[in-house]
Length: 324
Image (cartoon, rainbow, N blue to C red; front, side):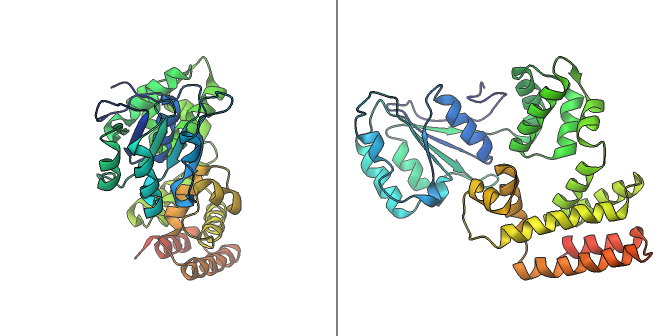
């Protein structure tokens, strides 16, 4: 089915809309926000994170504009809406403004559903829309999205990109922008993907960190073996682990439920998707756990610089991080 975003989305369902009120729901918050923004065309909405709802956010929609400019409100992470916000929504939706779009984005867990109370509010007056790219559709989605960016990404290239970066759609979309800048007008296949993302082994170290701090011990060990077979220096790989660990300690020290943009700002990260991923990884550990792992990394660093061999000390470190 055609997507409100670039590429192909599946599973759009809902009632016939009678007001510009739409609940977008799915597993990927990047896709939800992009679908919502694309549905508005040139209109730029006011954006509110549900966790930061303060009350009165709907007043601008209900009050006529003095200058006639288009108004819209986008509320993200709607599973975090407090009860007071749900009550305000109910009051507004009793008589929604037909000229002011209200868009709600609700990220759910795998195979999850949006809150029934929220669905009950929206169904009588608006539209319920699922936004999703399944794993089997991810590679065709990337090929189609790349084409929209003027990039000729081959199916094997899409597969190589997913293997290199994982399934995070926001990260993959950012990678397509990078590829379009580097290889515009060329066919991009596995060779170009490897050239762009694996040339110095940095992406493989990134992959090792992702798997280790996600508690995927078998996957982390496979990534470590791949790095060893590629001849990557153990101290360099350890440096990548130490860098990720420092970022996770910063993220774990922040208050809970901060929006990704604020997490990225406070922790010194470049991207919101990076903040979302690091919050998820940091949640697998207490702050004390991360500090203890940092001490272990320091010990491994001393061992390697004193003549220890990476094929012995590195697997033990990875097991410490990724194991139960």
